[in-house]
Amino acid sequence: PDPEINIPEIWTGELENGIRIWGIKHDELPLVSYNLEIEGSHLLEDLDKSGTASLMAQLMNEGTANKTPEELEEAIDLLGASIRIRATGEAIVISVNTLSRNFEKTVDLVEEMLMEPRWDSTEFVLAKESVIQSFPRNRANPGYMASLTLDKLMYGDNHLFSVPLSGTEETVPGISLEDLKDFYNTSLSPSLTRFHIVGDIEKERVETALSSLEQRWEKKDISLPEIEIPANPEKSKIYFVDFPGAKQSVIQIGNIAIPRSHPDYYPAYVVNYKLGGSFNGIVNLILREEKGYTYGARTGFSGGSHTGSFSASSSVRTTATGESVQIFRDEMEKYREGISQEDIDFTKDALLKSNARAFETQGALIGMLSNISRYELPHDYIKEQEEFVRGLNIDKHRELANKYIDPAGMYYVIAGDAATQVPELKKLGMGDPVMVEL
Image (cartoon, rainbow, N blue to C red):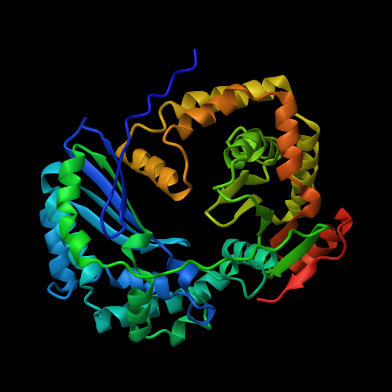
């Protein structure tokens, strides 16, 4: 029989400065995991200063006003803890793992890192140079360039979501240490902060430990921008990024889809599962197991608060490029016509049984709390997802596949050897491939 998920009790709270808290008591081990997600990051950057949020987050790990980078690292190590600040596309995230008995000491260090950055000029130069040196490597990477090209096609060259989090060759060289300080002063606010904690700890102890940060960190009036999402293409077309002599071709097919906050996001994830959401997905069984063209082929939905995307991807040997693109397109078309009851049963069985073990670790529970807070989901959203899977049938699957998987309205991006592959791709009936300038 399918196992039942037991969702632990979730407690919530809010500090006077606006920090909202979600917590789960998980006392199997004397450990605590927690994070702070400060909404904004890349969303608040100026396009001509893209990469600022990422550099700022990186530099906030490099010491504090009272500690050198080495002294901060030693202080964290002496607690047997890990503390890391990083930027994502939608938030600055501070992640911590610690022994329960050292919780308050790690909170003190987090407060020091957050409120008293060192702004070490030497570390800034090193971090910036590291990013700049990554650009030539990225341009020589077909997988990176295919993904970047797909983003630019979906959103447009001058859209925030088509610009990498790390910035570009045009923006990063012009970023100064003062730019990082200005971004820090104008983009971090407790009113945009969510705190998630799981472990051997009580709510009262958490709120007491955060009282100093509550008093020191004052609210700021920061508004997140309204982001316009473009329409998908009315007709599919092939775009080619030339890597002369390449022995493999990277295939990236996709379009804009629903954001993670959309009520159909999880149903769409479930519907995609048999197409390419697992090792036993149709595209992987054909391209890897049957044809031997690749080590793996996948399809799937990804999404954040503002937008999402559907993508189908694989790296195949050069001589199989045209046929592989055609297989992706044909299988997506067939998938829209409906799948068998056997495939429905496989999807339900796989997801229900794997889901039962998917929320046992502290890290997984932190992820669950993050989803609840970020996308305003009910505390029992996992149960709602289970109910959708249990009730899935052929008709519902077909309806959602037709709604969200449309190979006739996607961008087909290939990175590989143009001399040998462009002539083959012309035979697919999508017109002459458009050559993309690197």
